Amino acid sequence: MHAAHGDTLARHEEAPSLVSVRRSPAATPHPLHRLPEQSLWSSVGDSHFAMRSAFPVAQVQYRLMRILVRATKASYQQTPVWVALTRQLPREPLLLTGAEEPIPAQLVEHHGKRYLVWIEPDLPRGGEKRYMLRPATAPLQGFEATRTEKSITLRHGGQPLTAYVYRDVPKPYLYPLYGPNGKPITRHFPMQVVPGESMDHPHHRSVWFTHGEVNGIDFWAEGAGKGTIVNRQIRRVEVGPVLARIEAQNDWLAPDGKKVCEETTEIIVYRAPHLVWFDYAVTIRASEGEVRFGDTKEGTFGVRVASSMEVTRKQGGQIVNAAGQRDHDAWGKRAEWCDYTGPVEGEMVGIAIFDHPDNLRHPTYWHVRDYGLFAANPFGIHDFVPGTPKGTGDYLLKRGESLTLRYRLCLHRGRTEEANIAQHYQAFRYAPEISFQRGR
Image (cartoon, rainbow, N blue to C red; front, side, top):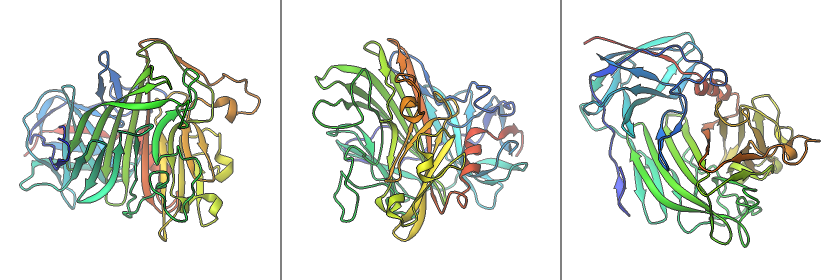
């Protein structure tokens, strides 16, 4: 669904009360075996991309209403769950009942394929739950999207979560990011000047995706002689009770205006009671000719945390990665995830980035700094690994080829351990087993 300029969207996705399903096999670890439904994106044409799931999914093919969910590989707490539906179905608002409170579900459609999505509130490893699919009898509270000529603002229950800024800027970015405490947890500068904030590195724009050496052009920094990323089209703005989704097409341009490559970005936002999730997927396509991502630390998927969270301020800021390395020791290291925590307006909060197991060179290297920069970078091996020859991290796309990188952001309260970040990563990596059974 696309918003007209200035319009506010409050449409809820609808789903059938009877679905057709086929039980999926047990989920397989991403790094070892790739299930057909594990990729978030797959190319389906010259410039079109089909959304699958950032979460392994079950498929459905016979008429049933009862859903059995088993946690065989991980625990699921406030976790997005996706189920693939194999055929077109009629629509109506949908709830899952059987828990203490009914759980809203959303039907998500992309290029003719549908998914049933909900937030699993609490399912420990080894446990199981039984749900009943039922039509909702009243409207479900959910996301809203307000679009202007320059940005798309997403809200949930009237509370802002972020805005995708895509016009009249050196590159598109998300700003600000609101944490589960309702406070901005990314830096305001350079979009706004706020007293007391750090004002270094003005190209660090809240949340963004660029790289410092693409065919020899610097897209990471900004200004004269630098590359720019220009929005060509907002392909989709979709809202519902479970998630909001933005899909954009952008062009990477050299300083002389010549097109270097194409980018398709999809951002999916979920709001759980105590967490905010972002799935961020970027596909770069070598549309004009060869594209070489150079071996430099200046990249790639970046976040600039709120200044109060910076480790250097000695106010409680902290960096922790999946290997247990902290603060300065986490820079340039490889890890499945990394978490940056610190105080914002008196409350301890954090932003964790999960590297998708199918990503290039997973687990990724982290260009994470104690002054507030927080970036996943699979290319900068020469800078990260002492003694490595320059060019080791280069990656070449031939004309017509594409590269997809996927990340999940977890915005949370408390320190890394309190927020169960390691557990949440396992839930990102492994699907629950889902089966459907006939019932009334």
